[in-house]
Amino acid sequence: MKLLSHIKSLYSKYSRLLPWASLIWGIGSSFWLTRDYDKANRLGFFTLAFFLLIIIMSTWYSYITKISLQSHNKLTKIHINIHKQKDLLEFVGLTATQYFIQYIFMFCLPFLYFKQEWIWLFFLSFFVGMTLWDPFWVRLFKIQIFRLFLRLISSCMAFGFLYAVLFPKYIDYYYVWFTVVCFFVIFPWNSFVINRKIKIQEIAASFILTIIIAIHSFIPSEYQFPVISIWVENSNYSIEKPSSNSYELIKGNIKTRKEFLKTINAGKQICAISPIIAPTGFYSRIYHEWYVDDILIDRITLPNISGSDIKEKHNTYSCKKYFLNMKQAKKITTKIYLKNGIYVGKQFLIISD
Image (cartoon, rainbow, N blue to C red; front, side, top):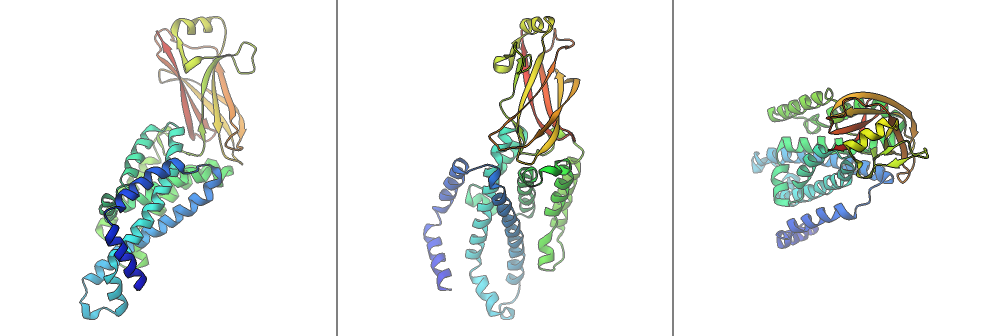
């Protein structure tokens, strides 16, 4: 108890500095954090620790509310001591939970940038911002649906990275297990831990998220939560394939309409080069879908690729010689998919006038 009192005294003395220290730590960690496939086990451990902590904290709020409503004479000595130290214990729990969730976010967010998943990146960056300022974090964390969102989002991000790294041979079942994990994490586990009736707020929050997860399963793969540990890096377009003597890289992936038509009329091919980064053990067939102004014109099957070290890229490419209606077209898009329809990324060739 002397140790707790000492910690409480230090907390009271420096409490005004803690939000700033937390903000600096959260932003700084995003720069010095090491991110690669070798850190998958650590990310998994932190995610599990966060999941357990957030259940414990939800249980803690229910427990404190329960004993606060009871008469002081009916409480045991241990309950009284816990109640006296509730502010300190809550601070320790909140700080630990905040640390784990920030690690998960800071680790995973750059991979969304690599994949150019701008919608998901903006949404999750906004969400991680809520965890950086302590006073704001403490208020939000006490809201049931916010804690449920935290559980769901952190699990999605960690799963999006870990699945292809830990189970590369079963990548075909990614979205099946993604849905199972989502339903698992939104289940009201804390109600079973303390054996109490589930509140209406918990049922409503879980129901809303269940609908969102169900809808997510039916939207196009391009807009579903991505496999963030597989992405396309430094994609380009070229005239003729890389192994050809007449191979020429299209600078900036921009071509004037006159030059483009001249190239096509000369019987040359336009090739989409998509260097794919994937973890060790990954093996899948790749597909390129070619679009002219968002109209699908071809789907090309490419050879299988095998995952290797993150520094080695698989130069997957496909080529097309014939294009229709290019006199008014603004861009050519190539979307990259795995054999089971899992979206990997896309690239553009701009047609300028």
